[in-house]
Length: 116
Image (cartoon, rainbow, N blue to C red; front, side, top):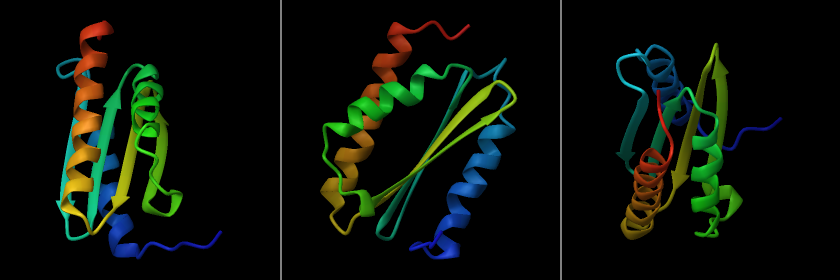
């Protein structure tokens, strides 16, 4: 496997994944964190429900993002499903649309799925 992302870039979502894995899901049912840094937008989410990942991916597919601009990782730690995205874009508006799409999908998902 050949990596096209700098290790310093990969370190950011790794740390976010680690933070998500240590979240207290009994207290806070959904972990959500993002970081906008230079040409990258990092988003990490964690939940006890695997349906969040599927729901987010469905929403993001409508954006038709080129595969070289979006890196996705999925991890199951015990009974927690963690998804992380690295979106590369030089366009501020594209990054805003990406984040808005995810935020809207998360809000809709939370309203329609019981997180207990």
